[in-house]
Image 1 (tube, one colour):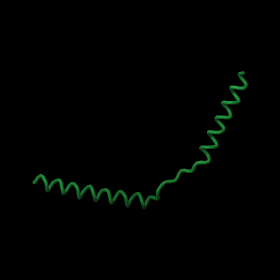
Image 2 (cartoon, helix red, strand yellow; image 1 turned 90 degrees about the vertical axis):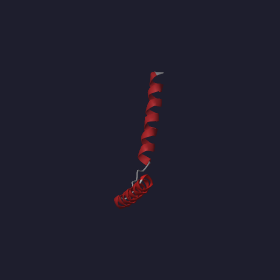
Image 3 (spheres, one colour; image 1 turned 60 degrees about the vertical axis):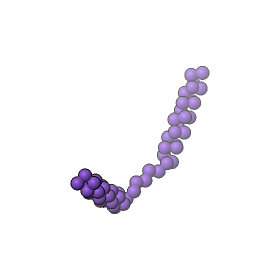
Image 4 (cartoon, helix red, strand yellow; image 1 turned 30 degrees about the horizontal axis):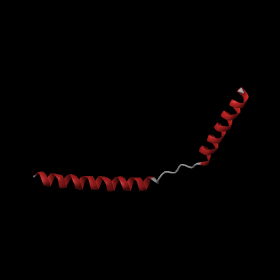
Length: 56
């Protein structure tokens, strides 16, 4: 009984390791991230200016 439980646990662990090893992790290139950051900062500045105009 104990051996069977160990075998099931080992098989589950092996399956998880295989699945994790098979999946790839990819990130966006740095230049794309920098462009998105710049666009977001520009939009934030524009919105802040619009808010200031509303309060004045």
